[in-house]
Length: 45
Image (cartoon, rainbow, N blue to C red; front, top):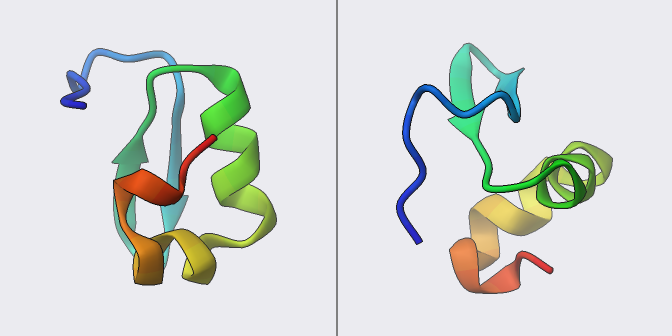
């Protein structure tokens, strides 16, 4: 899924801004960012 930089659901991690399609995906990423960076977008809920 592509997410625009205009998404209100974003977070900064290690100097990189990450954008999400929903608040649920954002919160999941924030709980364990390294898990999602290893698994890629398919690991998102």
